[in-house]
Image (cartoon, rainbow, N blue to C red; front, side, top):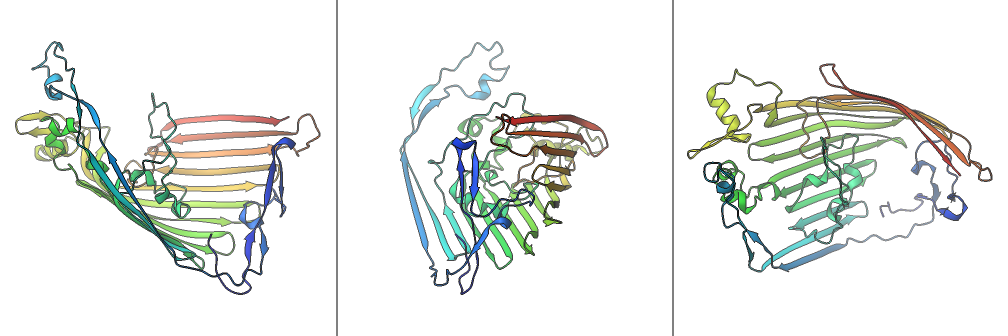
Length: 423
């Protein structure tokens, strides 16, 4: 719980109860006025908590895991089985053999230090996430875009609300297996802040098949056992009771890859029912980009370098062909979102526009699609709830949306409506 000590301080407070057996009746100490947008603004205020003492607490949680792993190993290298020259008919098969590897120990530690009631420092060295609940299975057949999974690891959940923004420019699950990570989050007066740095060993952790395959090893030598470095800066300032503006910056680097993102966002309450949210960011990346058309203007040396970095080339007499549509270059991108939301008790509407250019990259965030713009118009209309009626409440939600690329070409669109009622 965050609070400011001192005499005469007001605390926001509310108490509520949901009663399932009475058609989900919801009772609260302070009235929940549906004609006012927001939740915290409708809390009550209590005072008299003047003599609360604060303490600086340090929490250290070590972890030690000892385990032995056994798995089936190849007896014939993959590059021989998959090479038409050495296995032309595919008759050569590898049954493999089961091998128990040596016992290994894994030592880590998590640290949490409450500098003040409102400022927390978290640090982790080789954190153990083995006890975290697994993600629910998702069918990804014919899935063209990445799937979003909620964060469940305690280290990244601490102060996670500070790092949230409409464009999801920071997605903590891009940090897969950190060797070391540190985070400082908190709020002083009207200013909220979050700083995070991490070194992730997952990108350079190739499996044994790739390490031992001469057709793959030359391509991964540069990245083998290298870590990806992350840096995140989040600043936000409250303006009045329900307005705020913020700044976001992220950085991720890996051999032959670099990504920098920065931008501003904000939320403004224009009336008790009308709110507006916006975010605009720019990105600069040095990496492989996929282009729809091959660029013949590249000289042979540059084409060879593109293939080496982007998945192909000739190494030690072994030729691996990369896609000619992948170019290693610097790309600048832009992303934006703006919406206007009107909410009353029994009606409301929303207008939203958002988009990302072709070269937009947020390597520390979550991006479903680039080179696209999206327009959404949606409404809501419902009847007054009557618990004694046969149909307690009726709800109608029409919508229309359109996606188009930055060349003005339509990608897809939809018009529809949702109907709902409660008995």
